[in-house]
Image (cartoon, rainbow, N blue to C red; front, side):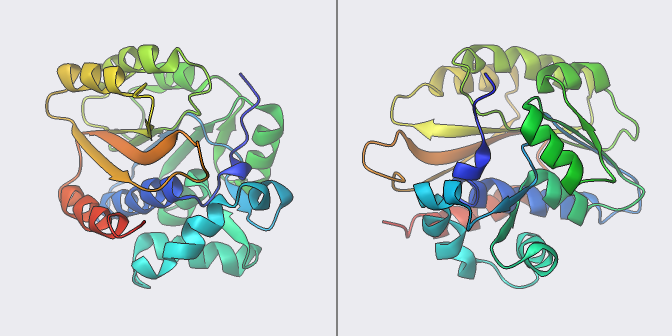
Length: 257
């Protein structure tokens, strides 16, 4: 349950998909002069060193952000976060989603991140001294916090899926979240797998939230036999313009081989 560490996968193509759209959504939320709440259920350590042995071992960052960085204009919110991170932490650094949230949000916004792994949580607190970082089960945090203050905002649910029951239990959590926070943007990341393990979860989510949007991209497996061949976001109450951004990104992923 506590074995997963994202450093092995940081900056991979799934991160590019997830983080670029997250950065865009946070930028969208801050266009209005009203505070927002950001809640993340599985935060990781927030800041990653892509020159670390763990990252080099898988080579996923080399196939990911290092390969496709040119996709994004300099003023894209994702590129702004990448640049801000490298300027502060070095050229081999990469921001996780909590770091992107800190960078894209304002002092008036509320940021709460959960991480259960003790070492990852310690690193998270060190990376985000101004955020509320809780060492707790992320799904439980969501139930305890909703609805948050301020009421506007976004929740990112980004589990490792190393607990196989997640595919069965996540829709129940999200159904309660959406009912408790009826104005919040709720974003679930999921892997697109050769096994098809994600299909039943998505069917349930779509039945429960017929207005929810599903954005997927495909990419080659990171190595022969690797089961993840794409990345997906299921978004409840997607902000205006997200579908267009996701479609543009998909055309770029479609060029990969």
